[in-house]
Length: 122
Image 1 (cartoon, rainbow, N blue to C red):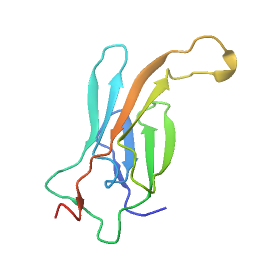
Image 2 (image 1 turned 180 degrees about the horizontal axis):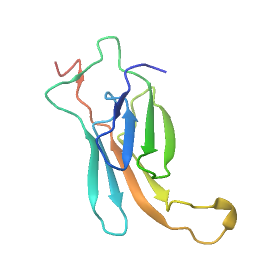
Image 3 (image 1 turned 180 degrees about the vertical axis):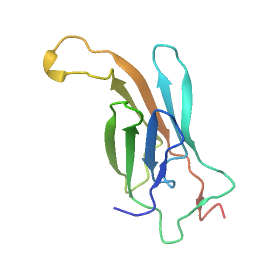
């Protein structure tokens, strides 16, 4: 897997690891309130250096902080750079898949792939 992933920990509930050549933004939305907050947004004044080629594999890692029980890793293998964005929903904390029945999703996570990279934006 290519190096260059960054970890952002400024949010009170989550730590996020992404590759800045893939992720231009990451937002978590509370499904009950509709309130969205950005965990990450690319600083458009600093394009990512991809002079050695654009990475083809990336990881998205979402970790809970301050007692929040989240530990999600998604590996993206996108050799043609075809993915524009990824979205996933999180079950309520304590979700037990063995319990059956309807489960509630409490948050959605959206990762946009519109990062400015160098080249061509240098």
